[in-house]
Amino acid sequence: MSASALDVERVDFITIPTRDIEQSRAFYHETLGLPLDPNNSREVSAGQVTLAFWEPESDGVEFSPNVGGIALRVRDVAAARAELEAKGVEFLGTDDSGVCHMAFGQDPDGNTFILHRRYKPYAPD
Image 1 (cartoon, rainbow, N blue to C red):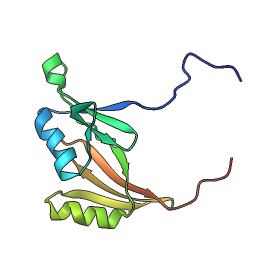
Image 2: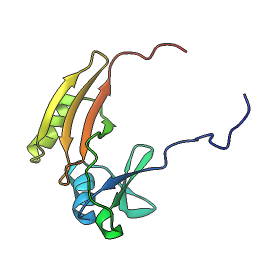
Image 3: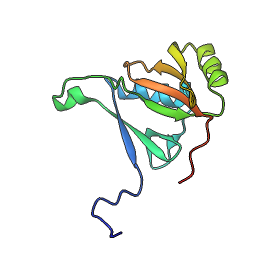
């Protein structure tokens, strides 16, 4: 198989739309506990991916939250949800897909985040 110009190595960052960058950064860093990106304290790290906050309205783009969500892999969905609920985070619901456990929450701008844990093993290649 030959290399392609679109040989993606990894996802470097995901943009989170917001109306208030400081409020979003505080939510993801202080409330969810994600560490600040060591190279840019205005962003946070979620495992191997950076979450970058963007104010679309400052660029003349209408604000619209990401309702599809980003899945944050946690060790125990129920325990993580309980910890965040104790901090005042409200959740929209939970799901067990038969493959994974999920709990759906929203940040202050209405962007969906998903606490996620796959429990079913991946099929062998």
